[in-house]
Image (cartoon, rainbow over all chains, first blue to last red; front, top):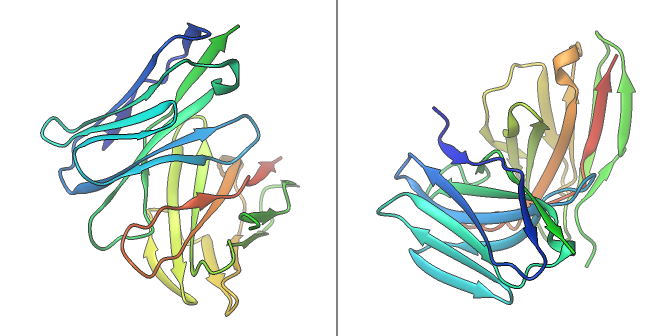
Length: 113
Length: 114
């Protein structure tokens, strides 16, 4: 069983929809949580970086962490065709292994005009 | 501020050869991590360097090695290439002086093994 599970999709939504992307994890040692966006032929781009349980908002993006359920989410409001990409969740432990991120498989999102 | 730069962008090699990939981190970043990305396994951690020392290592064979220079630039070497080494190799940098600072990625080197 993988430490981080993410539904690979693909997920197709109409422009303007609210998108919900999710990851579950099994290791309670994970304390830092990230969401990356990756366009084709590009490297992952950091979207959100969170530590504590709760919500963090940045523009149209909201990251949610529920440590008790080992579940994290990324919400995209008013989705745009330019949001079409692969979204990767990543996480790391609180101490030690500072350079090691564990990634989900990525969810492919298509936003149709 | 310039981002993480990886060279070359594309590389074609044959089995048995060796290859060296280069990564220049964001100015001021002292930690460089390397990842392998494949369709089947996703993104997997190879190793991390901080202040010219390997600080962490993933579960890859010894054919995969790296180093970091005093200017924080890093190189990754793969010897005796196998078909399964075909992948996108990504480098990420962070400040690295405290735990768990965010990592920023380059656009990778796509390595194809014939």
